[in-house]
Image (cartoon, rainbow, N blue to C red; front, side, top):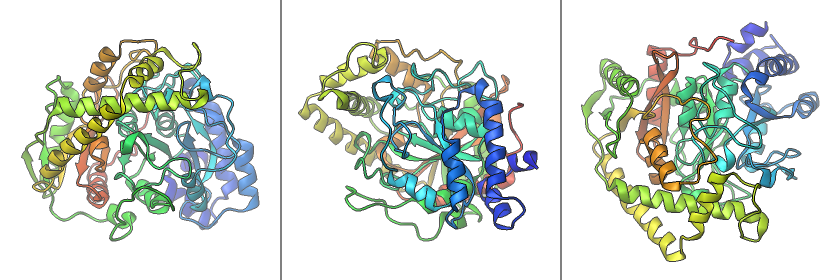
Length: 471
């Protein structure tokens, strides 16, 4: 039965539990057994909460769409009552949360059983998951490689079969990067779609958001149905959907106008395997009846990148300064790269920050105008294949060199953190090295429906859930 349970997505597990074919307790114990067997080689789950999970199941679970389904939260942004909220940093290693974040509370009301917290890069800064505090997470497809980041712990846990889905955050691609590296589905919602409360109003001036990495499209859609929406005091919210996203994920979309490009906006080379996956995805979309043409938005990439960098760096200074009255912490409390980014952020003046926001909005309008003519934009998810563990060094202190490498790796994902538009990575290919390759689709603001509908159509035409790494 354990092997059968491992092959189920979250909704499938909930259905088995609802029909009485297996109990929530049996599902939980099978999950714990897989975690204990597989996690030592991957270092995906860094804060086990098995006893708390058992207590929750024994107390009786809410009758939500995911009743009895095990789930894990990333060690970043959200607070899970009783567990440390470390941001994967020594600076906050001893800060247990007194209460759940609203997103965690909504997940529990949906019936999810929280089994622990997953690894992240420190403050979510790196596109890999190798914090000094917890050590590196490894890709279950090949443990010499990274699962990506910063939600690499969640992606490794799901890809290895420990869990059917797990929480992820995204400030520059951190849902979609590990989804691509690990062969999973990952959707970044529209800005304001999921509340950051009660702790915060927005993350990274609205660049950052939260959702999940999943095996199936329908799990992602149903989870967003269960967790989306503002809470009182949020600075803004995305418009509610016309119907449940789960309905969109299970029906073919109307004919879509899809632009495709395999050229990096900043002219950096894209790995041939990544580009070829996008071209093959374009052919499939055309075969499914969609209108596909070569096109890309025109915007000032240098200005957009400068705005992104200023916002990113200034927020890093604020994040590390919370523990020390706004000042940099003592040496050794944060990683050298984090310190270098924070020091750069400390030089961003208030007028500089406002100018960065204005530039972000100006370039966002140019990009959004492109979506008046096209429903979706298709590109590779990443500019390069998954890197080996250690390729992104957290001891690096040259911020400009790091930013150049970062943008070469994720030339497409960060753009839609800037604009706030929804975007997704869809599993599509396996490279010659045996590593997953994802393709990236972005839609106009508020249109997760088109993304879920197309992703579901691709999933039915070209299934990926049977493509799993060997244990």
